[in-house]
Amino acid sequence: MESVVPSQGATAAPKGGKQQRVKVQRRPVHGVLLLDKPIGFSSNQALQKVKWLLRAEKAGHTGTLDPLATGVLPICFGAATKFSQMHLEADKGYATTLRLGIKTSTADAEGAVISERPVHVTAEQLEQVVRSFTGPIAQVPPMHSALKKDGKALYEYARAGIEIEREARHVTVYSIQIVAARLDCEIPEVDLVVECSKGTYIRTLGEDIGEALGCGAHLSALRRIRTGGFDESLCVSVAALEAMSEEQRLACVRPSEDLLAGHQVVTLDAENAARFLSGMRRRGAWSDADAVAVFAQAPRALLGSAHVKGGELIPKRLLSPPEVSESLLQQQLTNV
Image (cartoon, rainbow, N blue to C red; front, side):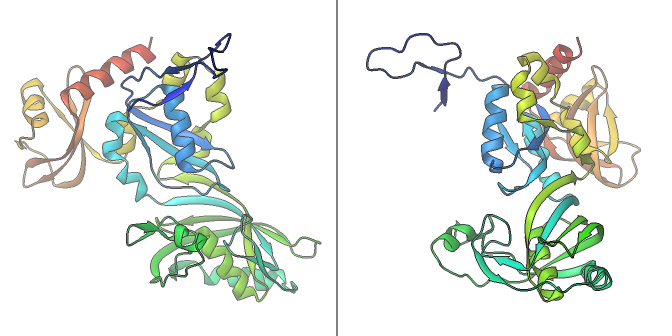
């Protein structure tokens, strides 16, 4: 059912005093918008807000950020949703602040304080402990997370006071940079930049660092600064989008092919493009490749992803003919 929103510029309320409401006229939008998620928004709230601002028919995000967290949240529209899994699996970068001496129920500033300890940490100890958490590590996912158990998110069990046994997950922390350390202040904090693999819980990492330091810790701030090849400098805020015209908002949507950066490119003529788009394999003098972005030659248009084995182009995810046509039209409109 179509969602409804308050009408813009409505004058008098109708009988009964209820505010006048109108249906959103949805439209096909294709591509990826790099949102700088604001603090206090869940990822889904941010998604729904941007979807409404674009009047988009179909949208999804690539990787959940906690309400406390800000930063890079790719919002995929239409055809781009078919490639969103690639960025769920991408490496990530985070900037975070650890508040030392206080442990909370959620490992961040939203939780209740569950223990307080004095902080007696030197810069040398901090460097040594941080270094010990780089490389392959095992993490037990936090109870306050979106991981599912029997169809329910762990945070639902946590809110009900139920502790669920969780298996440790293996992740990789590529680097941790100590940006600043305020160890002798009234509020001892450490600013870190973390580069890590998918599935790394920065809250858990911060809490584990605090335990290794002997004082406990929680995150007082968290910002995702990079996901895959997308960094925070490419993002647009909700406030900026709200201030734009519809045409300006649409111009912020990057083409779906940006999600396939790093893929080998194969370009097909009109006949082979049509056959590939119908799901048929094509043969050619291509080298084997696991990740291929396939384009039509004229007009140049993304057709989908594939892999090549033994000179055969094998489809993975395909756009529909309407998605190809609508994407081309959208590019023409935003390039005017």
